[in-house]
Length: 278
Image (tube, rainbow, N blue to C red; front, top):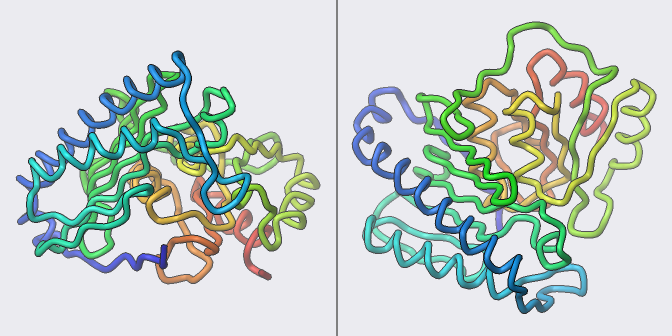
């Protein structure tokens, strides 16, 4: 997918969308719960899997089924909204509103029996994330956010503490680019190692980012993930108070575009270690 640019949306424009966004927020959470049921069922009973672009790029019948269920509900609830999904492509509609669906982020984990993956859904207005929900079905954690309203983990509001933090002793999450190192990844790992930072590569870009929102990781660094994969997570992290930055420097995110999400007090230093010279 090409990079998505996040435009400016004024407070008055956002207020005009209030009713739509409130309903969308509720629907996104409901769909995340439905997806979690399907994901747990498939994980327990077994699922078919096959490769897409290469031998490390998996898709399962649960990916397909979850996206179909979600798309059907969205077309009923929001008939003018566009839809872009990981497995079934895009539907163009008359509205500037567009939904992004990743039925399983971390399909390689899921297909291999590792219970660390997520469902992600995000509503955007001309590329700006406005409502997002992300479900980790195996921990029963529902992360969700609405622009200007806040970020939440289940019913708990997420707010990063204002205190200054330091890198040593902290955890930074990262991900491979599919099965590959991204440009500058080895050097970034070495810099973090020298600062006594522990790096965790768990297998889901979206979950890596929301660990920052939850205050579990001080930062996340990604060599680039599809906007479908990370749009909801970016909104959740931003609404929780994290600094989110793209390597393009203009709020564009997508495949091959380096990005970080981090506690504000370490964002600059983490950026300098990771993408400043890439």
